[in-house]
Image 1 (cartoon, chains in turn blue, brown):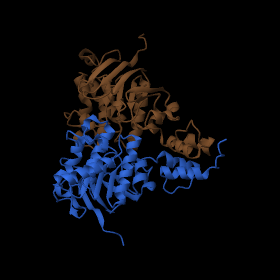
Image 2 (tube, rainbow over the protein chains, first blue to last red):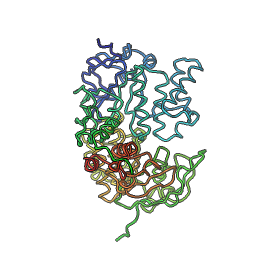
Image 3 (tube, rainbow over the protein chains, first blue to last red):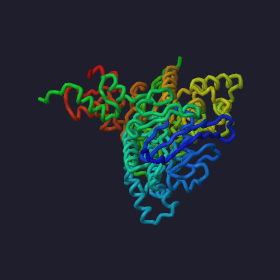
Image 4 (cartoon, rainbow over the protein chains, first blue to last red):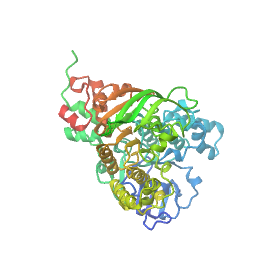
Length: 274
Length: 285
């Protein structure tokens, strides 16, 4: 038996005000608890719009959008905010408090949590993104990649059951990308559903399983991440996966760690150092 | 004939943000000649963004802080009013946040890209073909009549890049300006950078993407806590331990090669590490 979907789109059509061309033109899919879904597609295909609708950030869509049991086309955004979290493409969109800790506390405060619970949530989510040490720093005094991780911590603090991430690894350094991958995996293991718009093939391979390819407002493919990488509009196949192919290594999902293991296993064992 | 002039010269450049305990840039000196693609690399907070802001004349003017030492761009000092006036339209600075950079005045993408040329008093018969060419270069001719604010993040980044490319600037300062681009957009940006350098522009690129820059850059400056830790060939830096010691690491393939070396320590995996699948396959198959 398949579990009930946590997020569901049915025949969704949507056009931005003043635009005659539809941003979404009949989008239907669903994702279950704990599922991680990448949204691939060329710039302007409609990926971010799909995310925004699940958060209730756009109104006027036809069809159905359900987020954790709420009708996202009519429910007030503050109701959706109790079950879903949204990471914007530019962290500057969602950071506005004088300290990192206050920014992360904003969501829990809005939900009316008591002080002790807020403090624990702030500490926990800052530690989750590895930024426990900068709680009292002004967010804009941090380097841009860390600012982005602060925005992610703020999204995590309320414990959303649905994570909507718009390019969560864009402009991040390798260590921060690794942090985001780890956070997504851990939250998914705890049952959180993740939809992520991404052009980062490595992130999709490491942290997500399934991918939708979006083209001009429609979903044109729905498959595993590994089978959609390299298709027009999707990210290129990451270098470790290309290497695995080149060397004929048998790695069904060519994540970096798996390619490394296959590489060590396939090659003649090195002689012991003299 | 003019003597060949370094397009961007830093001489002992030191920068401190207000209230910060240390220097964001600490005695940084190097020169980037015309035609060079110079990659600025470092861990978060290493100073690459600050360096580009100082060269653009935006730091400390907009950021606050204090600057010492000298920076000149095509012979002008962007830290002075006269220098900035002389540099109008000659320095293309772009970041990963296109929303902060679009003028908000152009009602269409075409008007947005025409905004700077019009302000520089180009005649309309020069503006029109130049705008068309810039839109085509970024692959966004089909967006010319659209409203900039209604575009997706990646499309906005292309519009910002087109609005700079139209000026054919002698100096580019790109700070992760391709972060939201799709795979095709990344190829377009790489081609733009190559073409601009071939035209004679100096292109400074701050980027975390070692895989892309290993192929693209002529030279890399590695910054470690505001100081120059390496100035030279990207290939040489990325294939040795220095990239981890003083920087954020290397390409995905070099990361695998290094991990294999740390695990197995066989000569097959010894440094210098390969950087891409071709190099690795040649060495390991």
